[in-house]
Amino acid sequence: MTQHLRPLRGPDEIDLFTTLPYALNTEVAGDLDAGRRRTGWLWVALDDGRVAARAGFWAPVGDDEPMFLDIFDVAGPADLEVGVRLLETALATLPARPEYTRFVPAAWRDDPGARRDVELRMSALERTGARLFVERLRLQWDPGTPVPPDTGRLRFRPPSGPEELIALMTRVMDGTLDAHGREELTRMTPAEAAHRQYHDELVRCPSPQEWWRVAHRPDGTPAGFVIPAHNGYNPIIAYIGVVPDLRGHGYIDDILAEGTRVLAGRDVPRIRAATDVANAPMAAAFARGGYRVFERQIDMVWT
Image 1 (cartoon, helix red, strand yellow):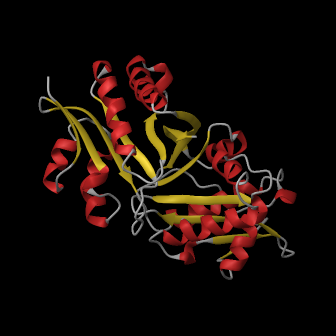
Image 2: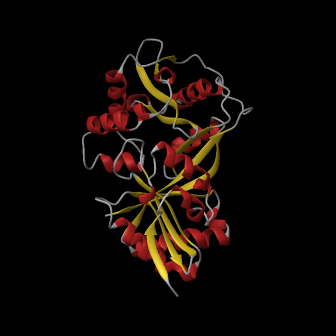
Image 3: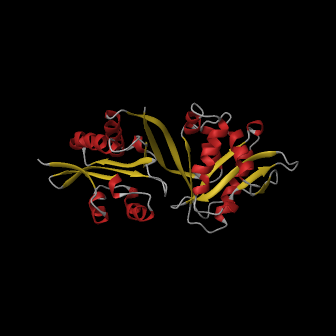
């Protein structure tokens, strides 16, 4: 048995890398062309020419270091050991270990085959020192789904500028139930976290900022905001929040409905969103807004 652990030698090996099935296979070639992946970030473990395991990293366009390990597969339980070695080898080439993220079936725990596959991958990652960070719901609104009507309780307009939106983002960090947000607050102030998310994520979306909406009550009191956007793959609700002192009044439904209207009015084929499984209030708001859970997402980190 001869095993080789190596990155791809060039784009002509994409078919080799995509031998193992996963939804992101169809995006690999386009991501390479766009600069979101590099062949040196796409690794395979070859066992006598068979792909026994693979690992792939992703970064926003222009970044020199991966943000996510978003593809990792082993062909089967017998390939667990080579999968662990592949991970350790690939990760050792990076200056830091990025977060692992994986899309899984919505009811993966109830499907023996899906559960086996998820737990096999997680076992390999745990062997390298990773731990579960959060499980998230992936949500989708489909054309034809009714959008809740405008209640008239709030007024909506684009933000006046970065300062207004960053100030609102800073306020909604107070009491956040989002695991990533809570972790950031252990390392930085709410203002620093809001500034980072605005500049590192929101403004990099390849969609007009004119879609963004600030919500306020008729008396001018700010209530929150919603960021409808396109992330290069799908129309999304990139960020949504209600200021702490106005939570509990149902404004989240009005704000989400406005974000949905902005995108639905552009005849999009779908709208995607995500929230933590533990963020029950936000999950319930998406359900009321006509969004269904079509997948889940497993995020793991190294500490």
